[in-house]
Image (tube, rainbow, N blue to C red; front, side, top):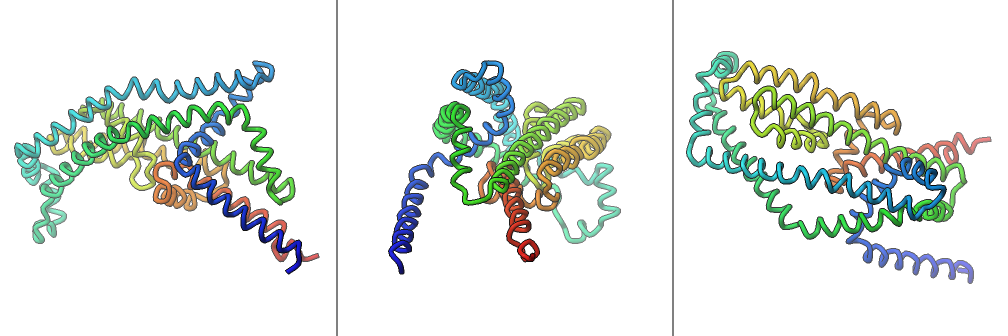
Length: 356
């Protein structure tokens, strides 16, 4: 080993050690920093517009954008949290009362006498022969849902301090990333040992993916939640506001989506005797609510990121498994960045590219 190779080995060994220590220092802040980067990239076009209006005053523009984002997050949460909390607790209490008093069990036990129950026994007699307890299954599901709601309310209360801490980190770092983000971007880009056009392609793909995923996911969730809330209100489903918000959150799930909420709501209407409204809600849910998921996401996310629909679906699903809710956004970003590297390899380093 030459002297130069020895120095290079020492340098990179120490560098890797220092990077591991840097990760240990920042591990607690990685999730809020990731949310901050997503917010900055999403609102950066607006920041550029405000910066032009203020004639290049970066500190003032950063302060205004940071304040705007905080208000966009905090005000809706503050206004909606009291209504959501009261409806959530009330729904849980009524489910518990119905389970404990036997009201729900008696309601479900008479389902075979309904029109749908008779059709079920006529066309699917195997359930009777094998003694599949459909009412008991639904009773268990209702009890599980009520316990799920209570546990998540408890988790939110327990983790309130952590949520406030993360929100404070996001609010603090938003200002500095807006103000100094462009310089930081150039510093990171200059460190990459790649051709300038390849660096530009990677960062452009990263930015396009983040903005497309955020716009597609948020637009889909907002529209599905709004349509679901309207549908619940028209058909007479109780707690329509809470269930509409729950539908918006469920839309981020790759499996089921908003149907996780509106389908049980339609079943509730049927079990209470409102089969006309139940069938109407099912048709409304299939045609309007859930179909939006197959239109907006592929159009906004797929078209801009150039990711196949299957890869996009698997990326969101794998992101949820790996990173939690943050993975809904990070999964497609990781996939799109990998695709950018694959394209660079194909152009620069593949056998065909190296062949004269």
